[in-house]
Structures are given as C-alpha cells and as structure tokens.
Amino acid sequence: NAGVTQTPKFRVLKTGQSMTLLCAQDMNHEYMYWYRQDPGMGLRLIHYSVGEGTTAKGEVPDGYNVSRLKKQNFLLGLESAAPSQTSVYFCASSFPGLAGRTDTQYFGPGTRLTVL
Amino acid sequence: LAKTTQPISMDSYEGQEVNITCSHNNIATNDYITWYQQFPSQGPRFIIQGYKTKVTNEVASLFIPADRKSSTLSLPRVSLSDTAVYYCLVISGYSTLTFGKGTMLLVSP
Image (cartoon, rainbow over the protein chains, first blue to last red):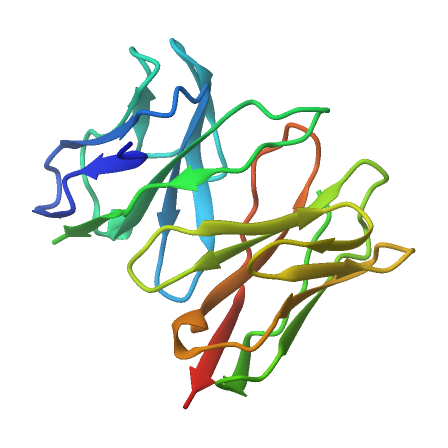
C-alpha cells in the first residue's frame, strides 16, 4: 500500500513554462486535494475534487488547473508558471466522512517547485 | 469557519509532557477539533480528533472543556522525534481543512 504518491519530487521551471504535477492514491478515496505551502506558512487549498470527473476551487485557485479523470489520480497543471508559484505542493486524499464531518486526510510527500 | 489561535512556537526537553493550547472562540455546535503534525519536508499527518471532553489515542490526548472555546493537545513524554509543527483545525461539516501557521515544537536533549 503506497498511500499517496506525488510525481515529480523536485522541479525547476522558467517563467512561462508549463507543467503537470501528478498525484496518485491507492486507498480508494473519493476526495482528493491540492495544497501549496510557502515558507513559514500553513497549507493553502488550491483545488479539490469530491469524485471522478468533478473539481472545485479552493482558497488560491488562480494560475492552476486540475483534472480528475480517474478516481485514483488528481492532476495539477500550471499553464504559464510565475515566480509567485514557487512553493511546495502537497496532495491529499480522504473518504467523504461520516455524520457530516470531513474525514482524515492523508498527505503525499510533496513536490518542491521553483520558478525562475 | 471558526478561526483558531495557537502559539507560534514552544520549547521542551525530552521526557517532559507538552501541552499545546488552541483557542477557537467561534466554534459552532456541530464543529469538530482536529490536530495534524508536520515534520520538515513531509506532508501533515493526522494525530487526533475530538468533539468534547477527552480523547486519547496511542500518541496523544485531546482535552476539550465544556464550552469548547479552546482545546489542548497533550503529548506525553516527548522525544526528539516529536519536533514538528502542530496544527489545530476546526472541522465544519463537509468543509475543507483550513491550516493556520501552526505551533513549532522544538524538543531538546
């Protein structure tokens, strides 16, 4: 059971380049999330998905797009990278939760992205 | 969403009990309190969750007073490996998680 995996672990981009971050989970979770974490800060939610084929915006969605074509995968895309997108990106997944409360989220190891 | 306030940092020594208090004055009736732990260069990890009174698991205890306006995460006999950032979050139904800056706990020998 690998849990939540993220590809790649590190990446350096030039301003204006595009890239896709891949998140995969093998726990059959319905919900998946993308966060970014800047130095000394907590995590901020970028986009999330409550099921295959559905996505929703989080707190800081601008400059990012996502897709959930398969239940186990959640892709985060940067169409035109900017230095402000230099950050560590974490993916997480969870079950929907019982009794109307958010269930425990399981996080991946992170992707460290630098945009020059 | 209820806003949480917790200390920016705390220091302790190995073998001591550490208590991290979080205030959440605007917590709603159906909200839960949950704590996550994050080691450097890793994603956060769930520690414990509770609604009221006391919850205990193999790694921590969570104390929630009757008015639920605060909660205290208790780590018994900390070791160097407990050095991490600890986040207090209030869960409102199916809302997504909102992470603050957390509390940086430094455990020294």
